[in-house]
Image (cartoon, rainbow, N blue to C red; front, top):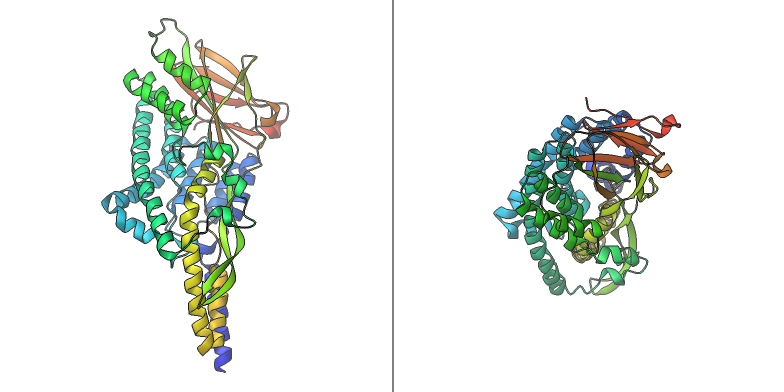
Length: 465
């Protein structure tokens, strides 16, 4: 009877853990949500998001995703409200880090807590892109002063992140040495090492500074007549993405006297695709457990690039084809974040596995069925954290040009459904934001409207309410 009771308890524990929200299949949830987005059915995507987040205590990811979906729908006010809630959560994280960095690192670096059961705090690039996306919302309604505030917060956030990561990586090295762990991600047999060592990943200075964010900052400061602040923005963008003519030209043009003609300075921002997913892969590693070397399968995260949207590098403006300049790749930033985080992940995962193995061996010696329960529970707990902001755009490309005030026609290539967007130029400086997912194109704000194409299912025309 006792044995049967233990078995029931073990199975009950597994059932409870499997049903816990911490073990939700986030990638599967967002795959369905993004399918609706890519088909142009934003309302269905929002319904799915709400269905999968019924609790009162909404997490950071909920606000990330909701803000981006509402932005695609054209509800900029709702988008800003959702992202405002996300910004409060990130602000609380910043306060905790600044108040006591050592205490924060000690809590986050705990070996006993699986990464996927921690409260989601967002990756560094997500925190920075949050305020960048909020700035784009404001620029869509020509609120350059509001965008300036969001950009200032972006720069302040980068400084907090830089200081924290320097200390965190040093701590990870010290912990690895203390625990005698010499394994690196390059030692993981079967792990896609090449994806983390790709040139576009290694060339990034870090995982959170975006050339686009800093270029946008320069453009906003220039529009507001603050050229002394615009120059550092353009300079930092050029530093983050060297040998980019657009960025070099921005600095050169800044030194010239202001143009006296009536043409407008237009920045067209095209964000396409979706942020990559995170998956979990199991790698067998030899671990020293109770005096024996035991081959133990451990789980580590990998990056799975989005394939929903065919890349494109040009668009047409009034019949003239113009090259787009890539200033941000969320896939590259995500891989760089994982590359930088892997030493800490390896240390935490390895120590946790050894500790669990020692404990289970002792339990097996006194109560095999209890050991079985622990083993089953460990199997449920095992797995890398796969949560990440999935509706975030992948590639951000721009083109800058001068246009006369009035209406103009922007044409996207067949990869984006051959969509046409009518834009109205009525400001001295103006930002036009477009979003392409699958073969859908979304435009929000007061100056851009997608017009139906020959294939009516290829275009989603969403206006600012």
